[in-house]
Length: 319
Image (cartoon, rainbow, N blue to C red; front, side, top):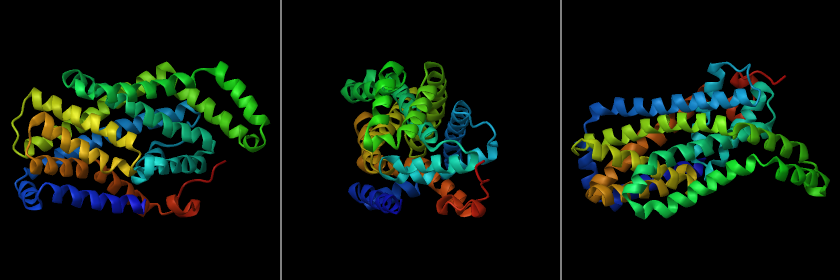
């Protein structure tokens, strides 16, 4: 995670320098900072709905005795883990969940996987009208959508999975992990069924629309005129750049997401580079770095989340 934070600092500095540091500083100084509470509320709206999706997934894998407060602590505590390569650090949430509820690690990992998949499908859904309006983005959109739907479809093919699991159980290297592999598959099959997936994607689309509104407010705060056109572009830019950042596997989508946001704003709204860079910095501070800060505050109050000391973090020992 330290490497992710360092990369974040480099990206922020790079964006500012690339677009003329003085112009960016001037734009930030002239920003309508009274909009910042609304921007953060839009981000909190996103986090709240995504938390309910997380808690819903926990119920589907059999974790029903975890309080909302404890569940929220694990969910928000995972935000800083987003700035790990490919967000792989988020698998730590499965460890926390195991210690808090006794849920098998493999099933906990499937919750993280289902979160990522449903979020990806949700932001792609929000990007649909933008892709129709700007066909140059269609190939990337179609490729990512096909990959995500393929994962969902494969998870439901028990006739393919069962022989593969039986074969894995007989192999010397995979045999010791056969129980975990079966738990992972069972969890994925449960969470990625059509009904739960449709509900999660719908909830995710509304959640990510909140950050699209935040992007629009950032543009208004920088002096851009309002209207449905700029609003639609703002939602498209935020959604599609989120996909680009996720696919890049870079920590927190750093560099890839920033380049995508700034580039799309310049191309689609004809913004000068310093204004596009300023908007990029503001929305990333109001979304990614705001979330990382909230997560670090949870870590500060529950240091045992990182040391895995159940006595220090107050998480009950799994039964």
